[in-house]
Structures are given as C-alpha cells and as structure tokens.
Amino acid sequence: MPTLLLVRHGRSTANTAGILAGWTPGVDLDETGRAQAAELPGRLAGIPLAQVVSSPLERCRQTVEPLLAARPELGAAALDERIGECHYGEWTGRPLRELAEEPLWRTVQDHASAAAFPGGESLRELSHRTVTAVREWNDKIAVEHGPDAVWLAASHGDVIKAVVADALGLHLDHFQRISVEPCSVTAIRYTPHRPFLLRLGDTGGLSGLAPRPGGPAHAPGREGDATVGGETGTA
Image 1 (cartoon, helix red, strand yellow):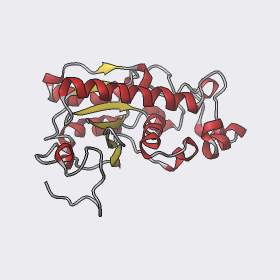
Image 2: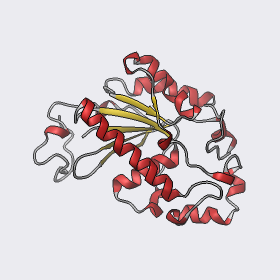
Image 3: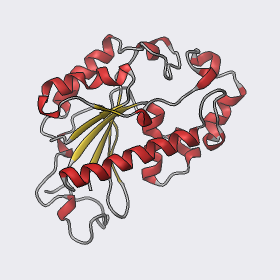
Image 4: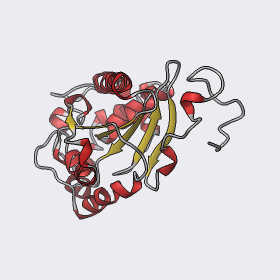
C-alpha cells in the first residue's frame, strides 16, 4: 500500500506571534517558513510523488508551492478541507499564553478525547475527519498509482498528531505526546494489516523513503508483516 508523507506547513506569522491561527484567513509563512518551504524540494529529491494534497489554508499551499514548481508534472495540489486545521471556534486568533489560563487547556493537554472547543469542533471530530480523509486518499492512490506509490499531504500540527496517533493505535488522549515541527515530514506506510510509522517530525534529508527494489511490497511474508528483529537497512 502507498506511503503517505505528512508535511506540516512551514513556520507562519501566527507561529511567530504565538497566536492560535485556526482557520483565520491570510495567515502566511514568515521569512523562516518561506526558507523552509524552499528547502522541501531538495529534501524530497529522488522520491517519486504520485499526488500532492493540501489543506486549503494559505500557509499549507505556500509550503508546497516550491515543490510543485520543481515538479510541474504533478500539476496543482488537490485541496481537501478535511485535512485543514482544527476548527478552534472561540479560541481562534487568541494568544496561546492567554489560552493556557483557560480551564479547557488542561483538558486539551491531558484528556484530548473530551476536549471540544466552544463554537468549534471537538478533537474527536478532528481525528475522525482527518483519519478518514488520509485513508480514503491512500486507497484512491493505491488504485491509480499502485502499491509502491508515495504521496504527500500538507497539513497542520494537530491534524498530523491525530493521524499519527491513529497509525500507532494510540488513544487520542495520548496524542499530545507527539511533536511535529514546522515543515517537518512524517511518513506512514499503510498496509492491509497495519500502518508503519517510518518517520516522525523529520526535518532533515528523506532520500531513504524512496521506493526500493525488493522493498516493502516485496518483503518476505505477507504485505504488512513486521520484520522480526527489526528492519535490516538493506535494499
């Protein structure tokens, strides 16, 4: 089954200001974020991509612009609101320092499955819509491009953490244990039996994720079996 590269958007003006941006329009990448986005094509060099999907928010679209410019064969990114940022409701646009004083903050930190943002959505709803979206895209890409395809989704911190928690079989209450930096790449290979987390919050080179002859789809045993004793590091 295909491999998903989850790219968090580069550093934004809201990140710099310590503001919870949510779906606020017009939140762009800052200077550092633009530099991070410019480095993405080089980090992904040698990895064939079947599809780029993006949150419709500006900071995600700006993050994949240099990659799409470097690979015109990909065309435009497919926009999917289901991998967009959490709808934070009344928390949107407020300083994180201020939000940390709210009683709901501790629920978000310690009991995420019970957290619902006033006027927005719950983290359970966020998890359901995002996991559903990436699994549907994964199935579609498998049919259209084959089991060794690699595709990329540009999204947001809480979205990526929710998808990783699902892939690891973690209860949503534990998803705050996961950390993903701006413009980091998290890689998940889905199989008929279980997902494999290949990278988490990687900010370096990624050439090792390129499909290899004799790789996962051709490994001994059934597709989706783990390598007993750990991965060998050989082709």
